[in-house]
Image (tube, rainbow, N blue to C red; front, side, top):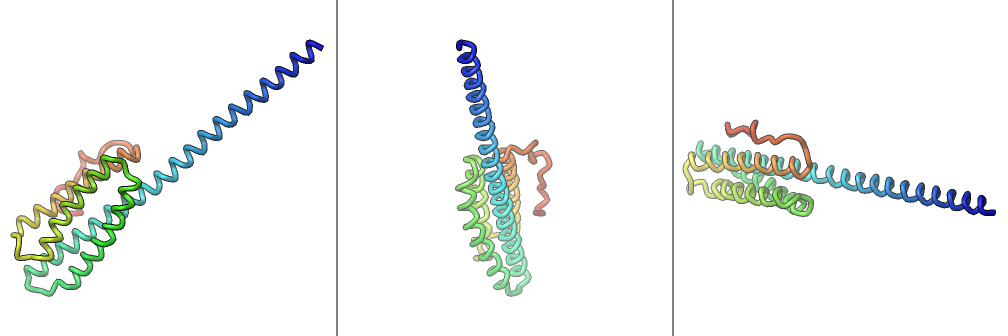
Length: 169
């Protein structure tokens, strides 16, 4: 009888150990799946936000160049405003999904972009040099955002060393 109780206790301990080990493994797998799902959404949000900033920056620069040549820039300004509206919506997603460093850096990007957009809306207000500096400051802020996003997503080494400063984005 005692040997049967010992066997039964051994089977119960084995079953409980197996159950808890499987439960822990499944819980870890679920957490990893959830983290991966959010990382994919974060990555897409970062990419779309940065793309919309680049679109608004490009349209603003082109509108300013058209104005300097004495051409009508209405279509370019409309494109700029559409990109700005898209950027505004995407920024809300970035605020929800990004970490603090990325959202703070994105706020800096916003401020710098808005300065360029104001200049494009009122081209008489700033010189060409100031406008170019505004555009370069946006590029610098975007590079900082890419570094913050890579950190948030736990992606390898920083882009900071290889960032572009030639005004091309």
